[in-house]
Amino acid sequence: MQDELLTIGRFARLCRLSVKQLRHYDEIELLAPVRVDVSSGYRYYAPEQARDALTIALLREMDLPLAVIAQALAAEPERRAQILHAERDRLAERISRDQARLEMLERLTEGGLPGYEVTMNREPERRLAVVRAVCTPAEIGGKFEECVGRLLPVLGRTGIAWEPLLWGLYPLDLEERMEITVGAQTPQGEVPGLEFEVLPGGLVAETMHIGPYAQLPLAYNALFAAIHERGLRPQAPVREAYLVGPAEAPQEELMTRLIIPVQESMA
Image (cartoon, rainbow, N blue to C red; front, side):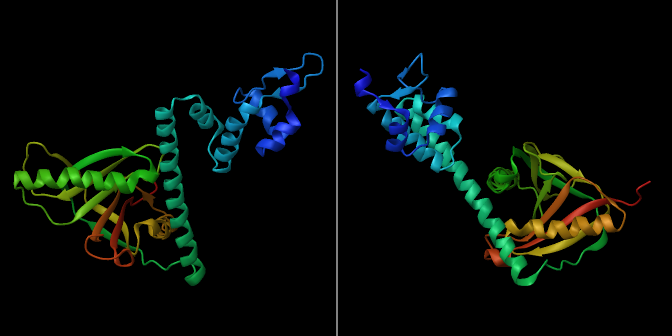
């Protein structure tokens, strides 16, 4: 049988892996040799193991975690497809985030740090009909659209008057899992099927962002910097008012009003 097996060196060259990688895959029980010589510790592999080894090499080249690769190799075809589909979606999200970062860097390279005018104003109390969702920072765009799809039909069915301006409410810190809120300003009164939130009036710092939502961090950078330079303390929730949305203009012409309530004294 040993004559039919391949040494770890030959098997590594055949499968485009290193000996070190094969030893590691054996240690984590991802790809074990069919035989280990008791006296020498030499590892031997069967030719039919090459398919799994090549698949591991291919998926690692795509930067899939070893734990996910192990699940995929051990799964039935249908389940394996589901695992790889989920990894494809995660890769697409990462590419989208990287593209947004690239565009921000290009904007900074071409024109330096954008100059946002930050003003201090007093915001009136607002009563919003709202829907909420929990998501990761990468999921905000999709969850926002989902919330809009839940909110507007209810507003339409109830016939309640509301200002045709959507609001987004967010925590100060973008945590791994966080709650976001989408709302529309409405008059007083209770309406079955709707949840309401009252945003208190008071002192706020605000600025205007014109451009894609992916570049909002540039505006937030200026806004938070101005708040701290004035010795103020930001208060949750962060408010975004979408003056010109994707249905009304191209990405470069979107207009978003960013508002952060502030505590007037650090004392």
